[in-house]
Structure formats: structure tokens, C-alpha cells
Image (cartoon, rainbow, N blue to C red; front, side):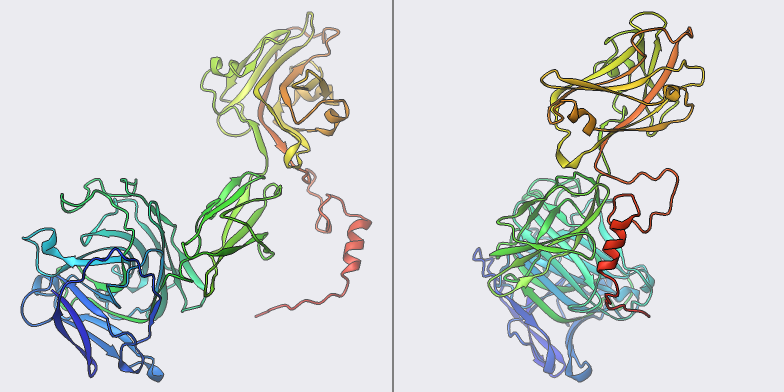
Length: 584
């Protein structure tokens, strides 16, 4: 049974009306309901409940007086589920207003005891008689929707924001895959503004957020849930409640509604929820979603491409991008943007504001951090000596061999060990990696090749060197300036400026071979026996400041790792400039 509610004083009287026709026409209208002046702004509000037992109605729907005539809607179930009450009540401004891309928002008033605190917002909602699916079902309507819960079922100190996909009034989420957040703080006996955005068809993107108030500061945003027409990893293995339904459908359209819920057998009474300023928008509604890189992503490439998904009303967009507090506007032609080379290890923020025919929707701000280097090899992918030798060839010259090292490592759990004996010709030992595809070491402002190495104090003093060869066969060799470097018993970092190779004719945009070697190639080191070195974590770096002596570099204004007249000139140019400081 469905009810249409009309105002009778402060209590809404409800009369039986026919079931809605599930229209395939997408109206995409925008509406807002304030409940002020003790009345509905929209005349088409309808309330459905499940179960809806025959007899005296137990669900009271009223418009309550608020301060300065800022009135609000209250839904109060007077009985528990086992005592003839309903498990949920769903209010829709008009079930015939069918939305695809939509932003549904409402002010929710968190009050009452723990059993009352179940406020729901349902987007792309559909309510239909239970008998449509199962003749033996309890009377009343069941519902499909993407549902945002705002509740403190575990007590007022534990206010939770949670997203669910509901099919035939059943939670479709797999256990352990809940999308939720505990709201910080304890002062939850107050009002908040809740919001759910839904975009797309297959896949569907659902994003939920909670704000201090409408238009106020963001408190928490849930990760975006992506729903497809297949069984997603977060969907329950048990499937849907009724076999005659499609399996795991994405909800592509529906109405917008607010709801109270309490499926517990006790206590009596059941749910009691309050809503104000309920709005449903298509044009100028949901923000861009599916932002990539994802919020909080780390180790993002220096030449990343930003990508996002826009709502169907979008006629244009503004991309804001930069370091925290310094976002700059860009005007992409589509839903992606190729960034210039980024700085290593830097955190960036970005958002996409979407233009509609009537207004611009400000997007959520995401952040990511770039990788601090490009890893050539960290040796973690080699489980066996044989797999290491498929990549690093130990037969370039000299007597020795290479092994996967699991004891003496710089980072992770593996390194490469090179055992060698240079007592006889050719008086050197090398190991070479040949790249299947030539590597570009000129892009992204790369300036240095860095590796971690260690040796043994029993090693003979010999040169430790690196050779790079390009795809045309041109090569150059750079040696460490200390022959006793191979005697270090702790890992040291070796930094090799790549400009030396370019100066000597190597095309670093076409790097074909990388070789590490030990020995002078002309004579024995004069110390018999096997020597040993370890190599780990070979990387490429952009310009960066190395400060092994931990010097005070706070005065380095221009970031060149030096404090000199250039920094003083920058400071002098802005001397006595006075911004505005906000202090407690």
C-alpha cells in the first residue's frame, strides 16, 4: 500500500492511492523542499513503508515547528517491527520524477536515543509492492536504492556515515566491504548536512559526504563506490533476494527520497528521524567523480595524466591543480589533462569544477604524492639466482658470479651479490642489464643515476664503475673516485651525474645497456681470493638536495641546495611585504 500525505494541522493524514508507473522517461528535474510555514513546498510528497500492516497506521509523519519558522519533516514509527510497526518509511517528493545523474542532499537532525538514529538518503530509488516479487511477502512496499546511512546504532558517541546498495530492501554489500567512516568528535546531538552523488550507468559512481551544515565545511567524504552490471567484488555472493530478478544490476535511474529505518525487533517505539532542506538536483547537481590518481595516491609518476568522470549535464569544466594552497586554473577540452613534468616526492592537490547550464558545481579536492624516484631495479622480483641471471648477465668478463642476496640488503628483502676474483686477466668483473626496449633517461628532468652498494673490509682496493651504452653502441664509463669504496661494510649511496654521459656522446634517450664493474682492467690488485660487493635499489632522480651532514639549509629560498646571494636577492625583493595572518 502506498500513501499520499496531506497536511492536517501538524499531523499528516494519509490516504491510499495507486502504485506509480515505473516510467522510462527521464525527467531530470531539480527540486528543493524546505517544509517552512508548516507545509510542503511540493504537493506530491508520498510516503511508503514496509511492512505496512492492516489496521491503524503506526507511522506518524509530521511537520514540526522550528526556530523562526524554519520547520522540518519528522517520521516517527510508534511500534517496533515485531509489534506491528514498519522496518522503514520512505518519503519521496514525487516518485514520478526520475533521475539519472543526481545529487541528493538533506539536513538531518541527530537526536533521540540510539534506536532512533537511522537517517537515510536514497538516490535512484524505486518503491514497489512486495507482491510484485513474492506473493507471500509482508504487505507494503520494498525498495531499491543507493542508500546513504547517517546513524548511531552503537550509541551517540559512534556516529557513522555508511553507503549501501539496496535491492528489494536487502543490503547487497558483502561482509567486510562496507564503505563507511566514523564521524570524528563526540558532540553529535545536533544537525548535519548529508549528501549523495550518483553518476553514470555502467559503471555507476556513488560518492557520499557529510558537512557541518548546508554549504559548510566538509567533515568526511566516503570513497567512491563503483557499481557495474556484473557482480562486483563488494557484492554479496548470495545474490539477490528473489530469483526472478536480474543478478547484480546497477541502478540506472530512479527517484530521490529520505527515510527512517529500524529493523531491530525492539525497542518500542521504532525509528524517529527528522529532515530539512531536502533537495534533488540533476543540472548543477553531482560533482565530477572517478578522479585518477585516486585521493591519497602515492608513488604517482612524474608525467601523470589526470582523468575524471563528469555528470551528463556538464557543458565545460575548470581544472584546479597545484601544491597545497596554490591551486591554479586550467581549461581542459575533455575529461583528461596531461600534466607537465612534476617534482619528485611532492604532494599536489586538484579538483574539477563542472559547468552546467544554470550553475557551476565545485568538485571535491583530491591529493596525491609523486614518486621520489624512478626505480630501475630493486631486485625484489627475483626469487632465484637463475631468474636474476635472466635479467643481469654475469658473463660480460672476468671470473665471478652473481646471486640473489637476502641477508645484506639496503631495502626490502633482496639485493644482488657479486662475487669476483680479479687476480688474473682480464683483471675486472662486470654484470650487465640489457633493456628489451631502450630507456629514456632524458625525460622528466632526470639528472642522476643512484645506487646503494656495500662491500667488505677484506676486499682489495679496486675501482668500482658504471657504464651506460645507448642503442647506437656509444658508451661511457664513470668510476667512483675512491678505490677503497669497495671496502665499506655498510651500504653507501652512489650518485652519478648523467650529464657526464651526455657530454661523452651517449644518447640518454635511448639507453640500451647498464653495466656495473670492479677492477682496473690492467693488473691484479695484488690480493688473492674471492672479493664480494652488494648492489641494491638502482634509481633515477630529478634534481634534489643531498644533505648528509645535516646542515641548516632553511635559508635556501630558491631550492638549489645552497645559501648564497641568490637567496638574499629573493628575500630583498619581497622585503617588508605584509600579508594577512590569522591568529587565535
